[in-house]
Image (cartoon, rainbow, N blue to C red):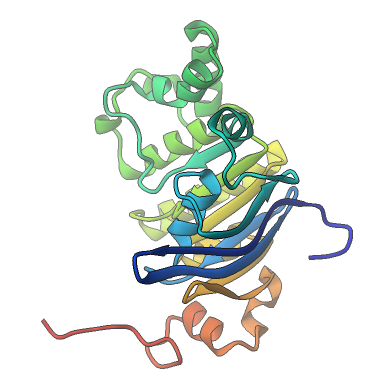
Length: 260
């Protein structure tokens, strides 16, 4: 991180394990304010566990997580809830509520989290749907009536509905074909730039990482093994990173593959 970059999120020496299985083994990561940081890594390397620790869904055994210079580890719920007011989240597979209409999904954080009146929240929801390229005819539909790409767009509209300072993206292109994945990447870049938000994304999709990242960090065996500007990843000098970003079977990362 450059000397003049202010960290919005700072993670230091973070440890998390489940029983004997160590998942995070001293993670250090800085997310500068107003920048997009993407964490790459294979399945089971700790990406989702790291995100859940930042959100407070899990508690680490050791280490600190600061957001705007406030350590959120062990923070009581009212204080953490205040911090989470700054946050938007695009979940893997969108994670929409099937019992709510599209616009009610988008407005959920405004109504339930901010106590906004339904009429006002509905107007904002329609505006946010328009921001992600969805017309008013989509608003009264149920999530079950939408394609995968449309569900992702609705999830993005919900993530930006509160004009958050921080947005987390959990595998934003999972389940999408390459063209729709690129559409979602473009929307993420456009909306994040519009909001001026700080973003942290976890993904194994290198096309997505290259498009949306200012900086990339790779996690392997519970540690950040490389971090730097996206422009430098092809010359990282790290054999693990090189193998992962080019999708090579041969290399220091050995996959546990058993014959069926």
